Length: 299
Length: 257
Ligand SMILES: Cc1cc2nc3c(=O)[nH]c(=O)nc-3n(C[C@H](O)[C@H](O)[C@H](O)COP(=O)(O)OP(=O)(O)OC[C@H]3O[C@@H](n4cnc5c(N)ncnc54)[C@H](O)[C@@H]3O)c2cc1C
Image (cartoon, rainbow over all chains, first blue to last red; front, side, top):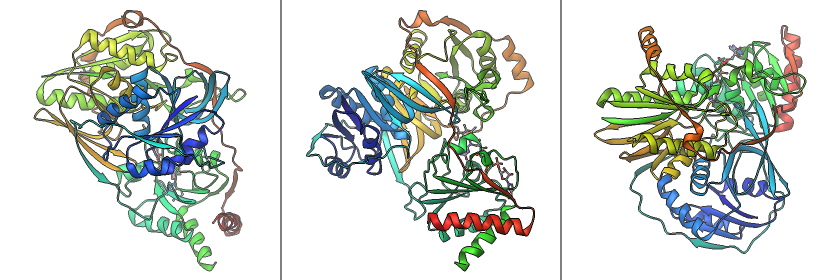
């Protein structure tokens, strides 16, 4: 099989390769910057490089058209992120390939593929039978390459047309707090009543060497954070996820469910979060969190 | 004057999903449905443009009159000036390519449109693939995942948040734009709007009149997605209980970090 993988950044290389580890074939990457091409070329047979510094879909579309002139993949792989879905959808529109997103499992069955994807806000998974040409967007945190293979790949540069859409890019502020990379994530929900109480959450994250985040209302409505965990926010898959004052609505859990261990603290014994909890405390977070901090300080 | 098309989808309220306790299969008949959240925001953006410079806002959906006319009326009550129902009983199974071809054919038959504004992703499946697909198929400028949209002096300004930061795009129509549910708070129709909408009619078109081949998704099964959890829950009604719970949780934390 011919596989073309859109790699938005280095972090996705292992996951993308993990998704197709059991499939034999030619592995080709599509990247938008030179530095990433240099990294990717060690893992892929071929790397198509379109130098597009600031992501702009219409320019990307023209570059994808160039690649398709030379290379017709059976499978396009991309992450289930904004950019990944945009590139995958563009590929589908240009080729009539079928496609799915939020894929958590890939199996080869003769000439066809059986894919498992999350649906209904991550409350259900569907098994679908599909046939190449096919575009697959994988969910973050579900795939990881087991055997790293060095490949003597080559980089092929693709001509990029001048965009006619003016683009201004403001990079995300680099912060030490990165829930997508941390082993422990402490997340606060509306049970936290005041912005100043977020200090307690941040302190807990710090004491555990982890990162902190929030549910959507705390970020989108109250402005206590720049991002949130969930279907419309970021997806995390830490070793330990601590949900503090979070009810556990599907939209939120879609971004947290892939955590290894879920610990939750909620005063309502019927909160849905407890259905998805490994270790839970039914109690007031304002009593429980200070106690945990105290114990952690004691060592 | 602008002519804007807004494709809308009838979505399940995923917060109210119900599953058969034996088979784990969803009991979809028991789940309420309404216009997708982001679709509603897309409609709001289209209406804001219409309110400021005038024009038409046409909605389109794929489904059955029986199930979908309420949503179309809802769109009329918000302010949509016209609507199409592409009718088929199999709307839940049609694949994305067919949906794209249906909208493309509809645009060609009823357009041209200055703008196509749609929800970035649906509330229930959330693939977010359709807008970039349709944009590529129509060969028009496309911006997806817009959190903030402005239209002034013939120019669109779209702000999108992607993983690495925020992108501001400036472009001119014609274009296809997909907006997220963060884009705005959609207007709530008044009783008067609702009564007015009752008298409005949508035009029904058959799927077959727009596309030749109808591709279907081959679903082998759908079941509740469960990640097995230990579910050790402590109700801490006393200090002792709290101490016990904390001991357990702290040992997990110490092991984990
Ligand atoms: C299209 C769409 C997309 C969405 N996307 C997301 C998303 O990506 N991420 C997201 O998070 N949400 C998202 N939402 C919103 C989501 O549906 C929920 O509304 C949200 O997750 C609820 O946040 P919460 O758990 O903080 O608040 P609530 O649901 O209000 O829960 C607060 C919890 O705190 C508990 N509590 C209160 N006081 C205390 C106390 N003193 N001690 C202990 N517990 C206490 C309560 O018992 C309650 O369970 C989306 C919604 C829609 C419609």
